[in-house]
Structure formats: structure tokens, C-alpha cells
Length: 464
Ligand code: ADP
Image (cartoon, rainbow, N blue to C red; front, side):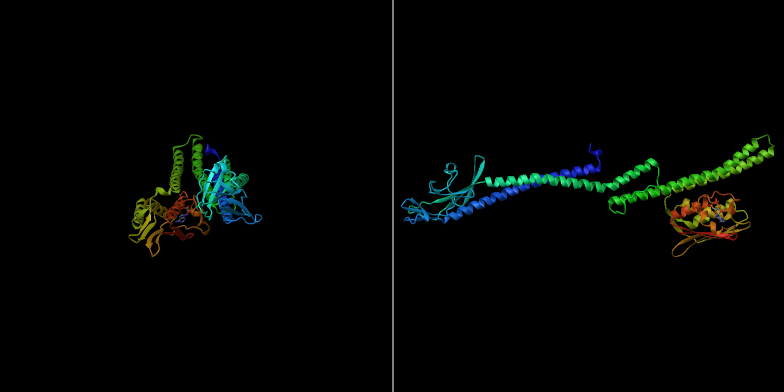
């Protein structure tokens, strides 16, 4: 049931429960502590009142001035009791007793109930009478009668006082604590509301994106750098990346369809034209050749596109290992010789035993693409020079030709997908080779450098 509640609700619920528990415990502790303190105070008061009365009783042989003291005849003499004797003060009742418990002077509200309690020196008792607790304190007097009898003073105080004060404290707590509780819950509610508002923003933005498909939306959480602020930033970065890759995807699809449309249109037009009426064998052959050429173009386009997207999608499909680059470049040039380079001559300057961390298949593809470009965009009887060298910091692969070259303004763009320079329109190509070269170099942390001059030739360098 709790699972479906909002975080705010859960936070406030937990907060309130814990607060309630704390308030309860505090209340009990205060009650207990104040009860103990009050009881202690009452006992102290009882003891000090009794002690004060000790000096106010003397035993004399002759009765003195009855105006100044009270005289009670006892045995052979008189008990002389000072006028200041505190018999009842602040609920403390004090009385003088003979050793057998007979009260000689003073007040005792519980004489009946306490008559059986023997006197014990300097000790506080307590007893419950009709729902009231009484504290008792006995004190032996320093009076020695001739027959050796001891006299006692006993003080008694009810704890009604402490109960009343405790009731006041309880009443105060019962009024104040709920008010505090409500205040704390209210501020907890406000706090939760404040803390969770950026999360609600994230939620609503995400909802808007999923409804409206608009990846341009971003969460605005100001410049707060707390956990939620950082979450929002991460979310925004993720959206940036997503929208960029969606945009790239969309662009690629549109470029690819655009590229495929040309050969398809040519094939369609050729078919329609040829099927229009009966043709001669030569005419049919010519048409088939056109169709054949366009189909080959489509096949290589589709092949390159597949390779490109595969590489784009999952870099983990290409494990990195130690690759002997010298050997790899040699194999690529040999293979090129086997296919044939036409009138173009090929020379290699390859330092031996150069190893790099990389993926063999991708690096082969990179070298093949550069070599194939150098040959395709080379001149009649031209020359292609392949070099691989190493210096202190880097490994350098360079492919140089003396072909048609690339104009300055096109040098940036030839690495874009499907881009082909005006000068090369007549030559077969898909426009994907160099973008693949660039991607592979990036995967290997390498840099692609280009120097070129129209009609003079081009040099592509890969610096690892
Ligand atoms: P493709 O060669 O299939 O057209 P690339 O991506 O390999 O695609 O090359 C893109 C463009 O760059 C080519 O169409 C061409 O105009 C230019 N280019 C690439 N290599 C060379 C080169 N060695 N000399 C001159 N132009 C080149």
C-alpha cells in the first residue's frame, strides 16, 4: 500500500511518527524526572523542618516564664518548648513523642495510622493512606531523662503538593507538545515540498518528452548543485547526447536514402525507356550495362553503409589488441597490387616491427580506404607513396599521391558522410570511405592530418 504513495507523503509520515515517538519519550522522561525532583525537594524540606525543631525543646527541672515558652510537665521535670516550634508549616506536621509513641506535643494528621511505626533515627519512610502518599522522618532528641528514656520528634508530610505541581507540568506538556508537533510536521511538509520540487520538474519534463517526442526540452533547476540539481544536470546531458545521436541517425537515414535514390531512378528510367517499345539486341545490352553499373554502385553503397553503421553502433564489438602495423600495411599494399593499380606505381617505406594497440580488422579497413582513394583519385601514370615510421612520441602512417588533389574549401568536408568533391564526381565512390577512416582513427585515439593542393596531389597522415 505504501509503495504507491508519493515520496513526500512517506517522508512526512516517517517524520511525524519519529517525532511523535520522540515527543512521547520526552514527555514521559520529563514527568518522571520532575516527579523525582519534586519528591526529593519535599523530603529535603521535611528533614530540614524537623531538624530545625530539635533545638527548640529542652528538659528543665523548673517551670519558667509561660509567656516565653510552653511548659509541659513530664515525669519529674518539664519539657520546655520554644514558641517558635513549627508544628504545622507548609503541610509538614511535626510532633514530639515519648519513647512508647505517646504524642506529647505538636500535630500529626495520621496519629492513628502511624502509632505502630517504631521510631528509627534519621530515616525517611513513606506510607500510603487513602490514595495519598506520606513521607515520615524521625529524629531522636539529645535529651536524656534520668530513667534513660529517649524522646523523639516525627515529621510527616503528604506528597499532595508534588502531585499538584506534576499535574501542572503534565498539563503544560499536553498543551505545548502537540502544538510543537503540529509546527514540526508543518515545517517538515514545507521542507519536503521544497526539496522535491526539482524532482517534480524532472518528472514533468520527462513526461512532456515522452508525450511530445520533443528532445529539445531541458530541465530548468537553476544553478543548484545539490544531489537533485546534479541529477537534473545528468538528465540534461543524457538528453543532449540522445538528441544528438537521434539527429545523426535521422541525418544518416536521409543521406542514405538520398544516395540510393539516384541509382534507383537511373535504373527505373532505363527500364521504362527500354520497355517502351521493341528494341534491338544492342540497345538491350546497353540498357543492361547501365542497370548493371548502377546496381554495382548500389551494392557498394549498401555495403559501405552497413559497415559504417555497424562501426557506429558498437565499439565493443572491436576488441583492442597488439597489432603489428608494419605487417598489416605490407599486406594491404600487396593485396592492392594483386587487384591492380592500373597505370599507377606504388612504393613503400615501412619501418619494421611497429606495434600499436588496435583492432586488426578496422586498421586494415583504414589503410585500404586510404590506398584505394590515392589510386582512384590519382593521375594517369601517377605514383603513390606509403610510409610508416615511428618517432619518440608517435607512430605515423602516411599515404601520398600526386593526383587530382582537394580544394582548400573542401578539405574539411570530405570527411563528412556521403560528401564527394566536385572534381571526383566522374569517379566511382560512395563518400563513406573517409568518414570511416576518421571514425576508426578516433576509436584508436589517432589524429587524421591532410595536406593537399588541387592538381598536385594529397597526403593523408594518421598519427597514433
Ligand atoms: P569516396 O572515395 O567513396 O567518394 P571518401 O569518403 O573516401 O569517399 O572520399 C570523399 C571525397 O574526398 C572523395 O569523393 C574525393 O572527392 C575526396 N578524396 C578522398 N581522397 C582523395 C585523394 N586521395 N585525392 C583527392 N581527393 C580525394
